[in-house]
Length: 184
Image (cartoon, rainbow, N blue to C red):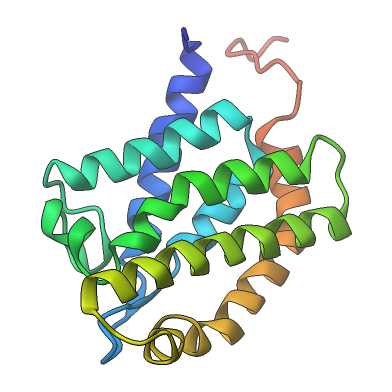
């Protein structure tokens, strides 16, 4: 699987975007913070290729796993992955890939919204099951800690993503050649 230079640059930029958005967070007593990294993943999944989407989100997890401070609260390392919120982190590549797959090539607000909702359900499912396993909590406690507080914000992220992705996709991937020569 050979990556073109353009794809490598996109992956690097997208990993940085996720890492920056992860720092926009609100810490909750449930040990699962509200972050904007899912918003970044939504944008990446809707605006890039499936391959770039999967590589970017997987690389983000790998960078955090080796100790780089890319996760929420400038955390990193294996401890973040095996902690209560680890399942959400592990779900990101799966969620992003499914969003990209369902969204398809055609620009459709309805299809994109559906793709983001399915991706969110996958993230919630993996994250909540992992939370139950790690904390030995009941499913009711896990839903209260991992799903219910996040629903309004995630719905807002879905709406914002769908509204802005079309404009962003056109801007990022326009097929115009840019000349460095001002005479052209």
